[in-house]
Image (cartoon, rainbow, N blue to C red; front, side, top):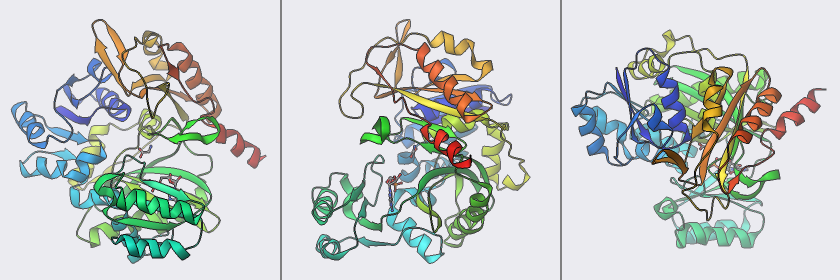
Length: 430
Ligand code: AMP
Ligand code: GLY
């Protein structure tokens, strides 16, 4: 069959790579794709929000399945557009992707269905928001309601910071229309864990846990980024926590969405905080995480096409979802200066070395690259996700850093402490 992916980052390259292993896939397309994706798929110059052009292309080229991998098109109704044209697309419809698209929606849903999450208030009126932060408990977490590239969350320690944050979100509209509504949340402490799952509207099957590193610099310093590295599984996500989450969070979320007439079909990403009062939901995403996909999909044994079709057809209960009993770590190679100011266009060397070791579980998933003549050059802030598997997390981490060392390009930057929590977990269990 012919499969198309909508998106252009490291997550999309990982999805494309996984699909390229499926004996069912005869041809892969990606709109718009990147330099790495171009090696295994035909990249089509259509933007992620150009639904009409995507649908027309899918029709003309007989695409059997389109995987919408990014938040903006999902929330904007890409899957609805494909369905309206009688085409098959994987991902939640807009009325379910709202779980990621509106924090106020997701908080109200959790409250209504008693799914554990931080206490909150939502505001559409700036004066009411100001009154609230004058007396609320500190620290307080203020969030722009809508999509804001993961940047619309401000943790405020003082009242002055909170007043400033209200202005940033609701008056200056630094996150655009995402700030028309604002959620104020109780500040939670604990370990953060991401858990990814496939959902077919009724059945949910958990893939694996993972942990991201959002800050740009070592020791979690610097600005928030799209993610500087990940490891999977999380050693903090114990069997006991998993059982609580299955009972109180996962199935209840899927059931709640169905009860609201918004059945969720696709990948559901739970951002959890493991607090002393038990696991609580920080956020939902309606798609694979980036760079969580990079450490999860290489460990998945199933054919991704089978699982996507089962989610669409409501037959996920028939799938025996299986993962390798190992670990993976992804170290992001970025352009120095990311996420603020960085240069592009530098030739990347060493990719052949990684490719030669793919059978040993080494991968260079491209995030921001493009083909330029005979070379692959840097074309973004995050450039490559150097990913490696290992029997243990420690081994995977050593392998990922080894692979990171095989690559060179001007202004190459990476964090050196991806997976530091692995050592902390080990110490704790001694
Ligand atoms: P979100 O996009 O809602 O996941 O928020 C981004 C990041 O802000 C999370 O990964 C957490 O590190 C932090 N965060 C969000 N909500 C809270 C909260 N209620 N308490 C503490 N930290 C939070
Ligand atoms: N890595 C977090 C996300 O994809 O939202």
